[in-house]
Image 1: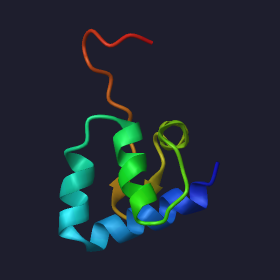
Image 2: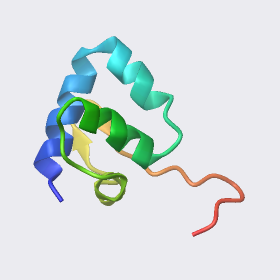
Image 3: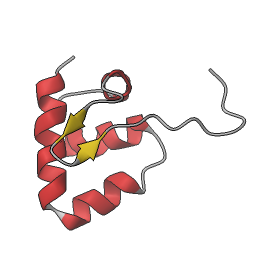
Image 4: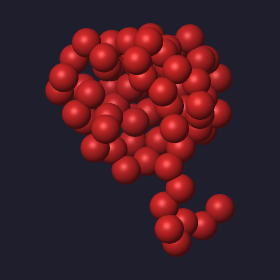
Length: 71
């Protein structure tokens, strides 16, 4: 797991509107991780969920619990 990779990705996301739109419209942490992997970052959806609550510049990662979601 590499939180440094997540931090780098979030910084890039803040400077690229299309990337930000793709990330904010993603349904799951795995979807976000796949976007990041296509750009050369190495982290999983689980890593991103473990990053929950942390802030990079102006972005705070938050896990959203959806009604009816199974854990």
